[in-house]
Length: 463
Image (cartoon, rainbow, N blue to C red):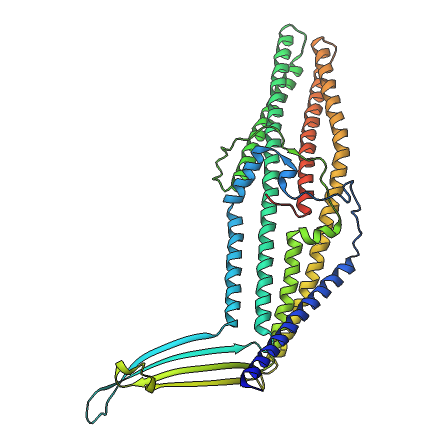
């Protein structure tokens, strides 16, 4: 067998060993992930809600029909500072992957020096010039370098998933902040309308008092309700400013409460397809990140196990040492050396074994964390489906209550003006109507938030 064929066979054998190790890591991590999923015993379909077996929407635009809100979401994705921090984590992980990949390649270094020498009893300085070129390459006998690269690759994918999760969460947060602001503005308008009604009632009471048709108690009672309505309006206006600032911060703007938006709730699809539980395994960024963490942990474990075996490094030096700098590259003065170094640790006080045990524990921990993340993801969807079902029912009840309260108040005001109704009863009905209208606003906002929560729990989509 020739030298060339021997080297080729050795290279193929090394690659085969490394490749088998990498394939084994993938198979083991896949098996552990599947075993953890089997323990969850997830059903084929969701337990709650009517959205079953339908395809999940690919993007947020499919469930939101509001141009102003879409523009604000895009602004937040471009300017939000927390999201920019998450993006830098990707750049960091990419650099770490390049760092790991560099270990597969030989290192090349060079030296150039000048040394002056002379005897002490006869000072006559003579110079010697030296130059050298060194090449070194660690052969990946056991796949340790490959495992480190694989771990870095999975780490990078995990960080990308975390970034995607941050994007989805930011999108949902902007929508919620937007709906909170719309609700706050409507509550403020409702408080303003209530104050106007209380002022009109006070005016009527004062007129009736002048004509002797109302007593001082009614007058004071009306004044008290006006003051309460003024207080409610002041609080409502402060709530609007707070809601505006919260949205501005998400957009990356200075929180000066100057942002102006529509007074109407955004149009959000009333029927959001939830697919099947299995869909979450490929859609939820946090689930994908947890899976990548498992695979990275097993690759790192394999790398740690490989560290107990000997390392093989090939070194080559090309050196020259001359008295005349012009002869530094003279072939006659160049010396070439090639060698191989096989090194192994004979005793380390159990350090390597302890590192292996720690890596194995990290792998088990990653698998358990994956199972918990998946279980939490399932719970998020089931909770959202159940919440939507409840709010759909509540909306009908609260709407009827609000309409009935307004009609009751209208009739009471007519009867009071006719002198057939007590002022206290009118004020009681007005307060009840005010509370019913507030409850209706709250349920409207909660319905939107619940649908957004469902889509976010399903993994969200492109923006």
